[in-house]
Amino acid sequence: MSSDKNELAFRALIESFGGIAFVCEMDFTPILFRGAVEEITGYCGEDFLRGKPAWQEIIHPDDRHSMAGGDLSRLAQIPGFSLEREYRIVRSDGEERWIGERLRNACDKNGRPARIEGTIYDITRQKQAEQRQRRYTEEMTYLAETATAFLQSSMDDGIYSLIGRRLKRLIPEDAIVAVTSFDESSQQIRVLALEGMDDIREDICRLLGGDPVGLQVGIDPSLRQILGSGKLAKLEIGMAELISGVISANAALHIESLLTLDEIHAMGFVREGVLYGTIAILTRQGS
Image 1 (cartoon, helix red, strand yellow):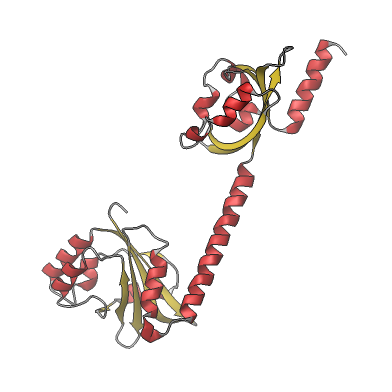
Image 2 (spheres, helix red, strand yellow):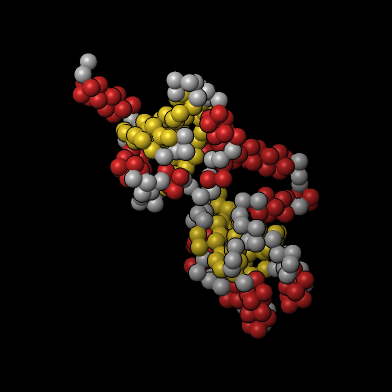
């Protein structure tokens, strides 16, 4: 077979497997870069052959530290050594991709490693599927643990605090979780549990004249409608406005400044159209 036919056969093989094939010197200076280079990286093969960019430069910054080490030393020293690794790259358009890379050394006539040959595949979909499965497993485990904890508790044992603590694990460290009940006749919510405000709880108690747990606050029809939807929603209302009918305006503003709130999100506990209570997530500035 002529060299031209060999080249055509090689090109056909590279194009059919959907990845990148490359050959480089032992210091990773590229000699050949063929295949789905642009589809995977956003750059063309000639860019890498010119070293603009070098392959190492497109490796995700958080993954670069794991790319050096003993395996690369063995690749340079042990004839026939091969390795596989997975890491992220950043395409020319800024998109992140996961790739799987297989490397092996090729030896010269004296049996010494002389160059590196490898293939690269886009494994982004596979990694996303693995991450989804891991997240589902974690969430199911968490739900099972929560259900077990509920079964082992009673209303007298602080079930609402348990709900608050469980939810606190899912949100930013500095955020606050409030669990309330709702009384339809008075249109008031009553705070049953608060988690995440230990650093300012003493000051809040002083301003309120007592523990915020047990505080009752009236809500207007528009807020009642939002909470009654049973969906998580961002509330367009400040804490001072919400509690101003319970304490003085100055005290309410002081509490709002202590909380340094960024946003308030809330969701109602709704069954068959009846609002029984709410969960609110109060994110603080810098969370």
